[in-house]
Image (tube, rainbow, N blue to C red; front, side):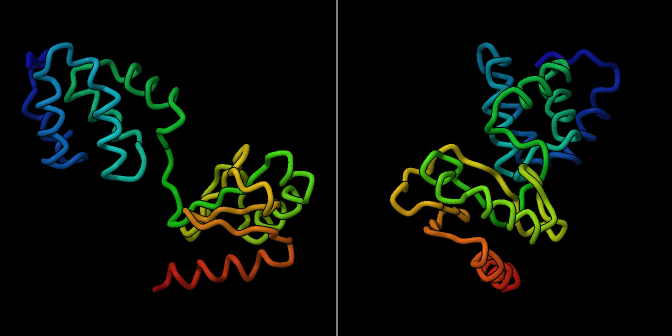
Length: 175
């Protein structure tokens, strides 16, 4: 890889501090491939896999090690929905907002979740346990309204059931 800075050793060391040796080596190998700029998405996936999300420091380190403009790295990370720019909770709550679930009260269930956790769509609870997202359809319309927590489906959920459901996962988080 051709480096474009006079202080490459310091830049590389700072990036390795942020990403770690394994990811720095992964990026080094990626930049040795033909058309290294085409490896950016794969590199970002690897970084997200390691940290769970892409912090600004991660994006800057990737830009430095790949010798790609930071704006391009940030643009790719923010464009694709599968990249997360904020930490997620230990448990992902997805409330189905598809037609069947919506008609059967998904909005009221979601409202109760937001009240209980003090968060809204796309946010993570202060304790880092839950992140709340909405889904267009989870494919379980016969169980509407549906809440999926990680890979577990909970059907025919009512607002009154929400506190106990959340408590079940809080106990798991403490284990």
